[in-house]
Length: 165
Image (tube, rainbow, N blue to C red):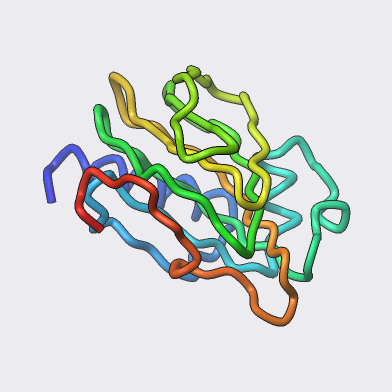
């Protein structure tokens, strides 16, 4: 892992610890960057910190919520993807990122998002997070749409992927 990537992951981990969050998981091995999974019991605290105190009860579609922090590298992009069992809300925490969305497999136009900008992604909506000039840090809440079969990392339909996944 590059020194720059180690530095940004250490910085985000320290920020989350300082804010009192418990990290349920960390993945810094993704080719585009990686993510931190926050303990689901802290969903409201996470929403208070990153989503202007939005009431997590009002976000619940099919039961639980899963808070995460995404870290995207400069000039890297996640797959063009969608999900069968979740909707998502993203809010930019640090840096400027690009996001493309569409209701079809054809990519929409690139839009820039800055700290405090928020986007809501519907279940099945195609989307792609893109790192621009610097590292981007994005808070994400998964809204599970099927209580009996919550979404997980396998609930990704990749329409296009730079990494052959």
